[in-house]
Image (cartoon, helix red, strand yellow):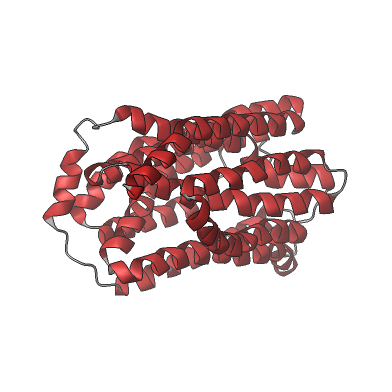
Length: 370
């Protein structure tokens, strides 16, 4: 549609700000109206904003729908983990969460690979260019159909009734944390990782298209296989975490992924860049659930829901500021400075994990031995 990288950065930044501002209110609303209702309202909002982004042409209107998307999405996403927890038994929970994460990555893989071919098919049916706005719009409309089908299983699920535990948890948000220094140690490293990721990865597809002239069909495979690679990596990572501990396994996975980022930006050929991206994506995604699991173990039970929300806000904060800075830098300096800056921020995040979280791991192990 003719918008540049700076516009993409502004749109993603405002989406992130809207998501940050609405995250805690969304959790409170879900506690009051129930997880299922909150997810239905959030899903309906995502469908409406998705359609709006497809059909509007003015830049201000597109940004408006991005902001609305960021405002309504937390109703869906903030309710998913509590919904799975409250509608399963302890024996079911581990396999349920593992399958949820794996299936999300697998579904993303299939859809992005298919999405790489669909613009060409749509172009043939509409008699337009394969990289034209009508061809892309047709693919996004197909995505809207898939999104609308999500209502069917959600409407058929019978939700457990809301208990007073949810109400007490909602009231607890107004209280102070018993150990704010601990929470800061858990949130600050994520800020560096999220800001670094936000600098470059919203523009990853643009990078491959500009640097290596990749067609959409190949681009779909590049992005889709990344998610497929993450599935076995995440499943194997659980066994590794049992030996090393969650935080050390998370640290190791991110330590491996950081230099691979440089291979993406400095690779002389597309196969090397793609291979580095696939391996890096698998290890980086492995670190996410391990870090969150470790963080939840450090917080007292009454503060875990609020702590989880703040960890998400910390991640969204970096992703909201990163694309803005990344879009401006990419427009002026190109991609190489973005990749170097992302690697540097990842290195700082790794240092903070080692400084802040490794002592917590050692303390937890000692307590378990006693």
